[in-house]
Image (cartoon, rainbow, N blue to C red):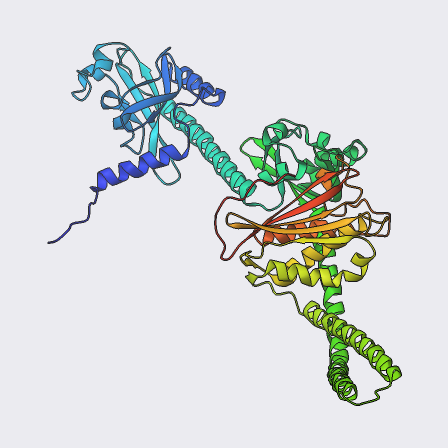
Length: 550
């Protein structure tokens, strides 16, 4: 069986392309515009007729963009229109007396109102050659179109074509702007000539903590702190002359009143007869955070390289000492059994053997501690692995708690509440350990006085649906409510100057998000703080995350 492809006849194919071209302009059924109204009034006056139209021929109708002489009429059926014939011509289509033309003599537009007798239509053409409609003049009396009138009609229809091209350029520019707004990773603002915000992308809204309806119509300079408005306004005023400007460290105010540092680039856009100001802002706060994170990663890499060398140097002699101590312990036990079976075994020797047992046991414990530290250093020295793999959360937390053991012992009691059936988490073990260590250290620093008798560090793991939850709770001084919303902001810290960069929690929050998880905090001043993590278990799934308090 042969299947023939469906193909339109050449005439119908052209008509479909013509209609597509007409719709690209987005002009059908739009309100009147003075530019087109002025043209039809001038056409009627130059051709000395009572009626003139800018008529656009749609699939089943002709619609009038501009109309003089036919009040209250916006369109007619295409099947009776004169313009249907006119758009098939390359030049001005003229009917001197419709009652004498067999094509139109019985046309209802001729036999009834508006009683057309004379018609002249100049086809309105696109740059691709499609005739969209006509600029036409109409009279209720027969007449002849003079050469001068013909030339005037052609000149005016070229003005209509120019306005349509400008309209298309405006639509294309708006489409590019919308695409730019949606796709840009930086904040983007589109302003009118007076500096009012016409459009803004979602990044701009998130950066300033404002909804897009709040930004639209706002003076852009009013978004800057008062002390920085003059410089911003001067830069915008210079745009029409310079074409583009750049401000390296311009501040804008967020909804919370904070200064957001941006590198602003602005350029002038010609959109038809109007001008637009395109402003792009790169978030310098985020850039600084990434730079600081890179510096921190470099430092960690350097520390890691040093740790790897130290671990290697310590590991071998430690292994020898552990082996010899284990041998010495077995030898002492065997000596004690032998002497115990010997008559007259001196009590003083028995006491010495007991003391030796304690010394050897303490030495073994110390060497095993050194061995554990070396093992942890070797783990810490590994380059961060960005690949995701199943991670035992309980084991990872134990590793971090061992690293913080010295500080922990003198600060707080440790309470662990592990879900022993906890499934593995799909994550990066080194990144998670970095986050856990930061949370534990922060918790210990929040409990500076009182010691283990007064303070407790609680670490809890539990499964919640398809997610694993980790809670790190301290009994420290807590976080004030006014500070809590900013706790994950880069460079924000409540520690004294010089004792913290304000990046630890910001980086941890970012890492958890990149790993597909969620991080939140709850706190009560004077009672304590809990940081909560939700992490995807096993293979990454699209299950909804349980709601977290923030």
